[in-house]
Each structure stands twice: as structure tokens, then as C-alpha cells.
Amino acid sequence: MGNSMRPEEASLVLLATRLYRAIGFAMPRLPEPTQAVFTSRLEDSEVRWALALLLAGWRLSHEKKAEAPGVAEIMKAAGAAVLLEQLDQLRAFLPEGFERFISAANEAGGDAQFAGAGAYLVAAVKALGDMQRSGLHAFLRSAPFQESGRALIRRFPEPGSSRPPVWGAPPPEEAAPKPKRRPGRGDRFDRADFARPRAERPAERRTPLAPPAVVLDDEAVTRAYLCTLGWEGREVERLIAGPKPKRDA
Image 1 (tube, one colour):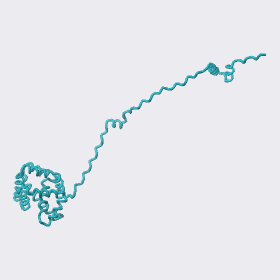
Image 2 (cartoon, rainbow, N blue to C red):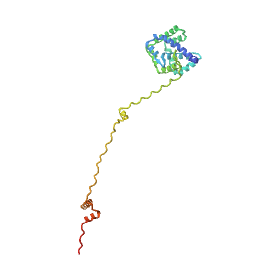
Image 3 (cartoon, one colour):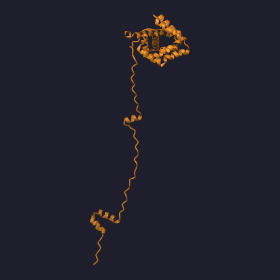
Image 4 (cartoon, rainbow, N blue to C red):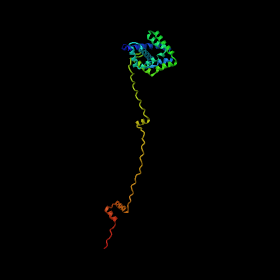
């Protein structure tokens, strides 16, 4: 980032780096639950770097310097404006060592001074009651702080990081391919030409209609019989008619 940074960005990163360094000296002496929250991962850094950026923005946005409006805009762009308002409201209830920690870190010039600034932070955290300390942890785990912290970390990488700044929201992750539905046993059998036979509706059994009985008289039976013997039609008719009666003289 170096030379490409604007004055308000440079001021923010400088103070945040000092606070981050002082927190590092304080870490071994902080209560274990607080250490766990401070070192929890956030984006590609830790919560303590996001906290250092937030505290630096809070302090600088209230100073009567030319960079103050620009710092306030940076915090607003990261969605941290509400968090700064919350810190303003809690300011009167915070232990005195809290603001001394910020001032001492801002003025530190070497390890001894940063260690002294860290001592103020340790005293401030230990001065909190159990309920207040749990409230601090809840604040650092809250969705508003986590979202703003990610935005700040993407824009201002952790000290010593080789990652370039990333503006805006992170690129959307590629949607995972939808898992293919595993075919059931029936589907696999169908594809293997072992399809289950489909039950067919049994055909209705119809009783064939018997043709009507043919009633033949004696004359018809005789006619049929003569035809089977080879007699022709006229001869059959003559035989059926019988001999002609004789005429009277």
C-alpha cells in the first residue's frame, strides 16, 4: 500500500499498527477468555487487528485534524459508524486505563513503551467486572463488529502481510455443483434392460356368442342331402316334388 495511501489511510494504519503491537505485549497477561477472543480468526487475520483498526478510527475521527473527516468516511464505508457511536456511549463507563492504552501506544517509540501501553490495556480489562468483560467479548463476536472487521481487514491487511488490499466485498464463492441424485435400484434395473414388468390389466374374458341354431325342415334336409350326392338343382327340385299326378280320362 505504502506510497499509494491517502493521508487519512496512512494515519489510520499507523495508529492501528501501534495499537496492534501494544496488544501483542499485553496478550500473555490478559485473562485467557479475552486472549481466546482476541486471537480468534477473522478474514485472513485476527480479531485483535480488527479491534486495533476500529480503535484507531474511533480516536482519529474525533481529533481536530485534517484527516479526521476522511477517517470517518473510511469507517462509514466499512459499516463501522454504528460501532463508533456505541464506543462514544460507553466511553464514560470504560476504565481509565482504556484510553491511556490508546494514548501510550500512539506515543510509543520502542518495545519498552509498547509494553507499557500494553500494561494499561491489561489493567483496563482486569478492572472490568465479569459481566462487563463478557459484554466486551460479546461485542467482539457480534455480527456488526465481525462484518465491519472483515471489511477493514480486507482494505488494510495485517502488518507483515504480503496480501494487497481488497476493496469492497470478497468475490462470491463458486456455487458447489448440485449432487446428482443417486438412482434407485429400480432405475438401475431399468437402465440395465432388467425393467420390472409392468402389470397389465387382465383382458376381460368374453364368452363367444353361439350362432343361432338353424332349424331345418324335412324338405330342406332332403334337398341338402341330394346336393351332396351330386344331383343338380332342377333334378333335386323334381325329386322333392315327387311324381306328377295322373290326369283323369
